[in-house]
Length: 600
Image (cartoon, rainbow, N blue to C red; front, side, top):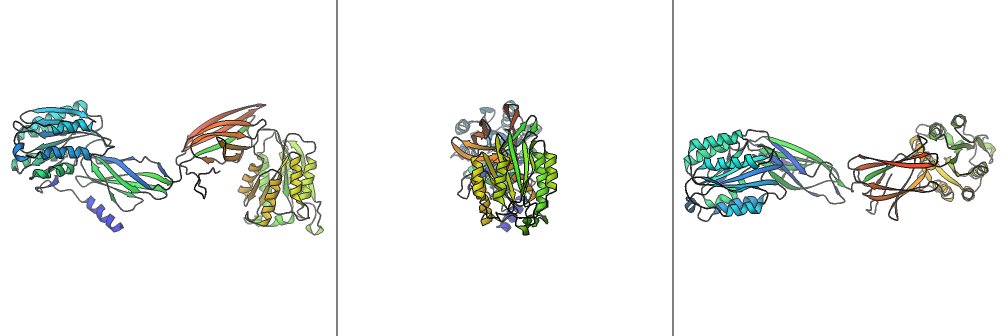
């Protein structure tokens, strides 16, 4: 298939026929082509996408070397002399002109005018978009008088000057079965060339003098010339005329085989098949002089285009992960297993650096505390009460927490249940929103029941969030036991296999949670501080914030846009603002069932 495509491309790039190559079988004869060849894909537009499994797409566009490529203003200049009763008794002229109009692409923006001429010219139809009106004019031509080609050209040029659109391709389609004054015809040709109007000539018959002047007119204005001796060839001859100086257009997708496009009236169209993902559609136009021009668009095929939603918050002018007063105790694993290595370093080193960085991100209005376990006694002593409060609750105590984290050394056991029970006592005199963030690389090693302790703490208003650090997959039994602790504590569970994942997990545990509803249907959720967009299809949504009292915010999402929803809290007042920006095609995540789902 690829070799066939290359052969077709080679054929397209061959120079067009010289006008000196005479023929009488209805094939076009071309001369040198002045002007710049241009081609444009009008549909699809760059960045467009086809959702789902629909891979078929019709590509439409325009090509021209005589002016603009979006508009064509075309005037039929038709011989209506009485000689046609003899040369075309069955009126194939009418069949050919009407057939050409009916074959014009439905999406092409073409104005059509009609001029008839014998001894004098008459404008039968001014330029119009209404193709049926133009067809009516073509079907009702009189046949009388002689032949004055120059009169017909001059009348057509006057109509184009009056009613053609700025920047359009302007063309005359001239038909005759006779000859006319060569001097006057050349003068009309010069006027057309000066006006940037191409004249395409079609001759019925074999009068040599008539052939010579019609070729000269076409060649001198950048048009094409066709000669037929049998009137039954007129319908096809009209279709063969290249009204905008373009011989052919072909398409290719992602460098694949060439697909010849249907070309009529300067517009082209062809169906193509896209591949999943990004597709490069290239259109190659070949002019009457054999020169080529090309253009391309990038489109996507696959899941629907999604919108992106980001939610941020500020308190007293500073970024914050939570809007309400909150007391958070970080409980960190300093047991011997934290000497295990990840990313080439001991887990404790990675955790220490990440906790130092993350603690500095907590807003000053938060009340923070730090508790560790396994940090005082060697594991051989099997000390199952090895847990200590290193930093008590307080605001703006980041420096003390940083110093305590820096001094952690992995030594002992993993008394999870005991550490959680001690954390519960730490919260005895704390009011408001309360949470524990447990960072551990292992499970209970002292026989306690951390799930029961988490449940007891939750009954006292303390949520338990758990981060499994440097562990196996979610299918592991140890991971499942940690997830059970978070579930009992009505908290969130994260797995972190790197410093970056640990940082994101810490933000996810302490940030104010929010949920996104489409009507009454929950379609997404997130937390402040995660700094990752949520992808959703187009629609109207309600964002429900876990604040006190709960806040409900309406948002409208548009595919290809990112909406940033920012909440500002000053004292007790909460305000919002929304900012939109264009991000282009963003494929919606797909569930294995095929449904579109929200994704962070």
